[in-house]
Image (tube, rainbow, N blue to C red; front, side, top):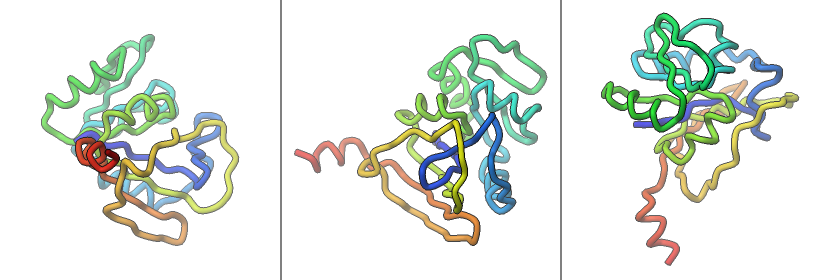
Amino acid sequence: MIAIIAAMTADRVLGRNNRLPWHVPGDMKNFMRVTTGNVVIMGRNTFDSMGKPLPNRRNIVVSRTMAPRERVEVYRDIPTALHYAEADDKDVFIIGGAQIYRQCLAYANTMYLSYVKGDYEGDTFFPEFDESEWEVVKEEDFPEYTYRVYRRISRATSATASS
């Protein structure tokens, strides 16, 4: 499985100044629960904002300039990163940032999206996606956010349905 996991506002704000503009402990716990033991792929800015690899996960960074580090694999492009990530036979989670989400949207078959409640200013946004290509298979509402799991509708099915 290749999945995108992200927290954003209703108007798709992901962050500001390379940081999350909110603190939602429940969403962070969910992120840890879902990604632990799996592979995470991120861009260099996302890695830099964390400062160190995420524990108990295989950390892959997509960057043309970053040198490999302990417990971090670095690949120059998304197809190469996905090739090596999928060889691990674990779920692959795309964890940001905006450019990586945009490039990986076509590869993903699942999205774990948390919609943080409230208005936050941002300079980084989640890419728009065609909701007709996705179905919500799980939705949970919490005081600070709404959590949705999307599954991609089979491309063959959606192609036949539109003919």
